[in-house]
Amino acid sequence: MAFDKAANMPDCESAKLPSDLDYDPGEAFAAFETYLAKAQASFESGRLGAAAAQAALAAHMGLRPHPGFFASPRLERLLVEIGRRTAPPSPYRRLIESRRRVRTVLHVATELAAVGGLTNMLGRWIAADKARMHSLALTNHRGASVGSVEAAVTASGGSVHRLNTGIGGLIASANALRELARGYDVIVLHVYSQDVVPTLAFANPASNPPVLLLNHGDHLFWLGVGASDVVINLRDAAQDLSISRRGVDPARNIMVPTIVAPAQRTQSREEAKRVLGIAPDTILLFSAARAMKYRSVEGRSFADAHLELMRRHPSAELWVLGAGDPPDWRTACAAAGGRIKALPETPDTKVYYEAADIYVDSYPFVSSTSMMEAASLGAPLVSRFYGPKEARIFAINHPGIDAPTLHGATEAEYIAHLDRLIADPALRAAKGEEARQAVLHYHTPPSWLNFIEQAYKLAVELAPIKPDAQLAGMADETFSLGEPDRRLHEVFGYDQRDTKKVLKHYLGLLPFRERMQFWRELRQANAFDSLRDMARGLLPDWLVRQLRDQR
Image (cartoon, rainbow, N blue to C red; front, side, top):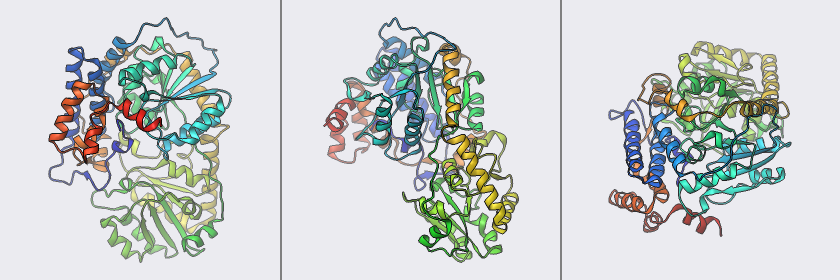
């Protein structure tokens, strides 16, 4: 398992927060520096395969936790140089034709999770863009294929390519991706933040088709600034951050809304409430997200913020799906007489959305996909954000749901919005319909296709990005505790799990000599869980993939 999206963020139980006495967010930057130095040393000694793998380790350290920066010119310069030195000669040159039609698209993903927003968006994108042939390259997929995405690819006339089953490491995968990409009009990257393969593959932009990078991890550090001709942002704050903290040229930034499947009601609001055991005349406030998005801020929990509201409105209840059972919610939940419910995650969420009278966004970090799902069923939306402009990545500012959402800039304003909606069924209906129409326009076909057409058009009209000039114009990364960095540490913290237990999954990407050296270090650190785990670490990743995934 060379890449792990789940490792991008710590889980709530293992996260170390500013309230911990030994909290030191600078540890992430120090770990990044350690592996970057190893990558640079390997590069200088001519061991380019080792340098690429160690660069991947450094990139992963940039995710555990937020490292105090959002882009790394030093790491990208290294990867670009490795990519150039290892690329076979080719006569391919990009032609810049403003009227050129985009007929074929190669999507590139690290892997496809069986369930997840990134997988869903990719499948919906391909299925909606019916006028083109779409193919998919997977740099490091593990396990069975994802049927819905593969079916969409096949229906368009394209094919799926797994790059990590051929002999060789990251450089071999990059060379295979580069060669494959030259048969398409444009390339779209849906990759994980730490995936080094695209930057290696597209180190000479004039020698490959235009590259568009989907900024799906907009609050995370990611690679690709120097190799992407266009950055597709999914919301306004992401576009601002791409310019201000990643150094992306404003002319190469564009916004495309998330594509969603509009929810279809299977039962009325009252029927859904009966299924959940809720009286039909109850006003249900509902929210759904991962537990960390509800983390308490300055000793005040999500439940605390709604307690007085529940007291004023005895017919109202607040259900929060995904919160689990936070200890610091229990007093407020008990004081509300059980009308504030913190529920565990479940894959069966539909009935909750169908029952909701009002959708309440997670806090202190937004959950936009949940907002869109609720809006598509006609629920009015309420969100809050109390921070400065520089931290707007924590707020709802997504096209389609920004305008119809009732925003609270203070807790008093936020609660006032909820007061009005609880008391006024006509207002609930009007705001819910406004949200539903906005989601249909911005986030679903056919109108969504207008946004993606503009992105394709920009990609073929622009001259290829020049990585040297782009990266030279950016200041080298340093550790920052400004905004939104400080807030990212406060909300997400950092993972207390042993780093080596995570990094062992990169063993298979290292060349033999470095793999054995790192394997011995991991064994000494008791990082392996079993003898089988220890033996797996001795094998190159491509061989494991052939043995497991090609049977």
